[in-house]
Length: 352
Image (spheres, rainbow, N blue to C red):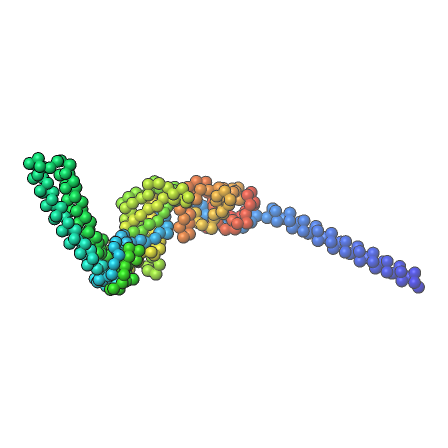
């Protein structure tokens, strides 16, 4: 009985092992067959036949808006603020007195200096008469003449210091918030307020060096600012004479008239710079471009296979990119599934 049970157990184990072997063997064959079939099965992709077109080459850049003129107002002399003659946040005119520093001591010094100047002048006049009569030497006259010149210079110096006690606006513009009050003791280090000319504004931006030859003084640009849909116009008036080595860019400055007063210095500007219009340009959809370490590549259809092509891509719009070299009219460009394609992979192209 035991021998019979042993025989049955061996038979069951043998049959089970044979079945397991067949299952594993069939699975392996199916996987190999699947891999082999995948290799030969074309990948379905979409593409377009390239045509030339006229391309309005507009460069989109970021810039900053600056005041045409701006300055920090300081006093050149120290003293007590006698009076303030401007209202914060208002427009002031060139030459308008903004504030006055007390000058009582300086005026007293000036009277003293003028008295010495008059005395020195009289001594110089007498010395000149005596020199003509040969009553004194030339050296004595030179001393008197020098004393008069020194006294005169001292009077002029004090007069200049008195003039500095009245601080005037160097140009017309809007003055900001003040940090002083009447009676404040002020020194040249104290910032009184900022004066900004916002009637005209500077737009400063940089372009890549490869576009440097296409930009000229006097060219018109357009720009927008955050929070507004209005398109503003500006004119390029200055170009940096050299390329910045660190960034390989060329700095450009344009001027815009702030007619509505809604542009503020310090804000960012989205600049649209028109470059040369390119005829017979090759423009491709952005999704067809594959970034690689050495640049950019695309795939074109070539006799039922995907062919990898390196391209020189430049100006970019919202949905397309300008190709300078690598493609030509008539090429069938693959526009879908490009990230998973490989060179010489079989494809089936559906042309849009």
